[in-house]
Length: 451
Ligand code: UD1
Ligand code: CA
Image (cartoon, rainbow, N blue to C red; front, side, top):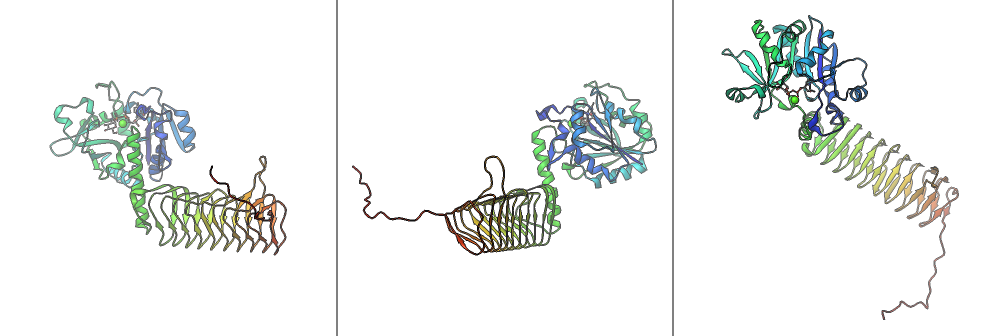
């Protein structure tokens, strides 16, 4: 049996934020959730030690399979783990994780647990170029771990050691309980150090094993906004490598951000500075050009989203073109072989197959049929200042440039609207309808001259 304890009671002062440290986001997911997700599939139970901001943490995580443990005063990592001990089974392997170390991998934890099944105690360490601030791993003559010395308690020679304690460990429940009962706050910070159980285990002749983590981003702790940005980039690079391995073409992995779930077909291309949020799905042979943001978008095969476009909570069909500079707002459904061009905003509307809205338009609360051509600068006037109204444009309609369609309104099949019209009443099928002042020319008029 595997039990997991996640420590998350600290205040996180250096974040300079009212939001709890472990609730800050990496890839748009709270850090603590990353840790839960990394351990969920390999553990039988998760116990999270909380103190500061406990209410907000429980509210955000909102998971009733988690056992919340309250640590009233933060008296050290050893004290924090002690609070969770009543829930830990003697025969189990107990894994200790941290809410502010978000990028730990499940595969690493698996190895650590396997080691602990044999040795009863296994510690995850890492070689750090700049080990300052961390607990140092002290190894004996045969390279076996003897103890962990905190930076603040270390001697000159111990400070030179570059193998540090990540804090992450796996240990037999019975031993964890035994040694945590023996530790004392005899250190410069007057805290109960979890790390002091190492010496107790050594005295007890436990053969402590270790795993040296080869990817330091996995064990990086987040203390301030600098660390948070580093973690974000590390997370993004790890994710993008996975996407590329699965065949996605990414023009520059360092200029791509996916903050959520992303599925893609074959031969898709993502150009620079694309941001994906929420759940996005693109089919085969889809191209997303530079500077686009997609949020909960579904884009079908052979469609291209041109530069500087935003697609949110919308569905785009096959062989269609969106953008450049298009804004597709929530509730939009664009059909196949359709075109939404530059400076076009579409909201809560359906656009049929082979239909085109090529330039400078606003289409809101509308149902646009197939084979419709909407000229430049056409606006659906969907809002009367109080309520929103629907516009229905049937198949084959042609709307001349710079026309306003005052909703509620219906334009019948194959109707043509003359350019510059303000249409306020329903329009019959197949006819030309226009509303326009007659053009006049004043022949005697003279252009004024400068005095
Ligand atoms: C700890 C380790 C150090 C290791 C480092 C890795 C100890 C004594 N030291 O040091 O060897 O190199 O992590 O980052 O364990 N927490 C509680 N309750 C408490 C105290 C802490 O929940 O009473 C939580 C904090 O919220 C934090 C984590 O435990 O998530 C680590 O605590 P922190 O005070 O940051 O330990 P470090 O001094 O960094
Ligand atoms: Ca820390």
